[in-house]
Length: 637
Image (cartoon, rainbow, N blue to C red; front, side, top):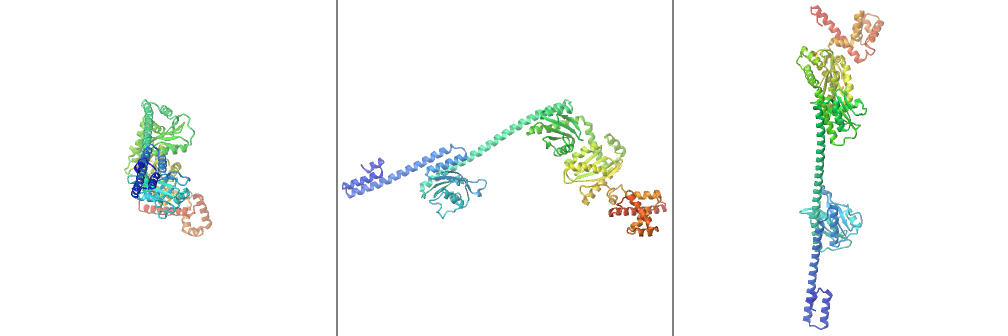
């Protein structure tokens, strides 16, 4: 049989050697043996080429099958495991694994996401840095990198973590190729053997081709996951939109029902019962001064102070606010006016937008019905604001015009009133304004909020008592110090603006003196009150400090005032004062004891003594001036 026949039949290499041996035994010529040997060598080369081609064909077929199979895998984790499994089978590796870079932080290196053929738990989850291992070379150059014996290869950048994992797996030869899409490299595909192995160019090329296919599959999986996430988000948005639309339709239907009741002329009780039926709970309607107007169901007992605080919070926020007990408070307002509040204690907690939104619209319906019932009152409130503006203006008001207007509002401006200016420190204007509106109605007075300061004109004769009452209510409500200046009393409209300036001066004086959170009136501020007040003059000051002594002298013709003058002039020495008065020292002692009974036991305290000395000097100066004016025929007080 010829060499060509053996080659055609796919005979093994040994048959070619047998053909040569047969020719030698038959004593063929040297030329024939040479030709036969040349033909056998050529046949061996042809066989090698055919085997190599068949091997490449098998590899390409395996790549085609891999590409087809990878398109059938869904999910990133399953895809990575399939790629590692295919790489291991394709090149007969002992182990294959995949590392992906962190897309959010590329400087953080790569993370081994999947492995096939691993025998320890050190590989999956291992983080590789950007400056060590074969992966760093692949990521940096975008080309394959390999080593027949990784741990013994000193030319590679090593790291303790990677070396420990390689050593634990017993790996020697490692081949790494890039995973990427286009020019972007986002991972590395590794193949490794547990023996020293020199990789052929065909093996490296085949691994590189697998890496390109795997990179496309991974990118496809990423895009698919992103698309699925977007679709899921769109589905959620659609669901939320449908839910919101459903809630909006429910709210709209309920609100239309309530408005129809209002336009049909129902009373607040009927409206509240319809709202409570929609909201499923107990409902309480309160007016602007805190009085309960309507009650439906059986609401729990609540502390009045807490209810007031929550009500002012709701008015300050302009929307319903939750109560700690699970209920809600909604403000009832119209054009910024505080008409009251709604308290809702639902049977079940309000967990959706329907209940809160409907509660807010119910408050509007209640505001509408209250406005329809209190049209004249609303007009009066506008007139009240205009009235206070006129009283505080620099233009002198006409008493004959303002007094009847005030009486029509239920305010007797010609009777004693006091002016109180309260300033919450550090904000909380919303609560303060809501409280002031309620307080002014309750006290039959007037109010205004300007630049964070509450102005109140309320009936009374004691400005200090009125200021203390305001502080007692407002301070715990706003939870901050409240500085208050007060003045008065004033009767009639012509001195309201002047009294307002005095109260404002007291407020500013407290601020300058650093007495934040305190209360002051001109009478309390001693001689400072004389400087601050436009009405509390020298006579009032002298009367408030030493008035009892002056009255005692006038009634009994004694000389207590003269004795006080001599006592202070002698540096508080009774003996020297007795000498100046030409009386016995015991007389001075008895007179000073009488002074203590009239002015109080603390009359000699430094601050009180200073006030008394100033009052004595003003009294003496005023009396001297009066005598001089009398001498020239001019009498002036």
